Length: 310
Image (tube, rainbow, N blue to C red; front, side, top):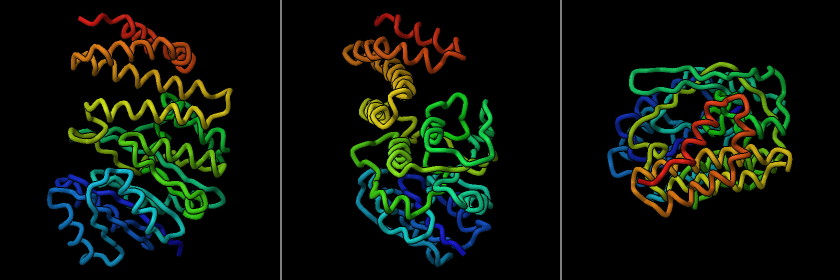
């Protein structure tokens, strides 16, 4: 039976980690290597991880000084010995048959992908695509573009956690998560891997992963350093794309510049506000091109770029 290495970075998730781990150890595919990377968590997460090694011999725990999410993921990649590699965030959880389905689907391709649920408090939303993804092999070009056409293919996305990867593809690439990036390192990892190894994939149109959105998560951070990282990410993603598709990355760059603009306005940072407004103007044509079927979004962006700093 094929072995799957599941990498779970752990940091300040004490209220959620047991639900996560329980969902992993009860997977219908049982040949698992479960790698828990305790990234210097200051709460009781480290102790909980150690307790679970007594419950399940498939669990291996690595305790390290805090170095950030990318460094924790890289420890997992270093020690993963399975035929396939998957990722789960330690505040999320998964359906019992997620990895069974992903394993069935990855045959003859490099990456298998499933849709997911978004969980906010007690509310669960099933994420689906506006446009259909054929139940067939997805070629490299579309593997690159689906995460960037997010409004059409929200269920695909660029996260690493709703996917299963052939370990030999990752090992052959020598690729690691960029430890200088605090936010959106997953889309950079994914796009680089697909480009470098010319990956093909298959998609399961069924939500199997539960993505918990919560206060305190890095995605909710209002740190300028964290938010600005994502601009660097999309500049690097742009470099990976063929010239005829680069505007998709620039459109995403424009969107995230607008997020930072609103944060700069809220925090009264005039210098950053003016800089982001200029970045939006520079990339507005790309944003319009990527949102041609969403005129309300274009109008909203135009409103933001005309927002006075008062």
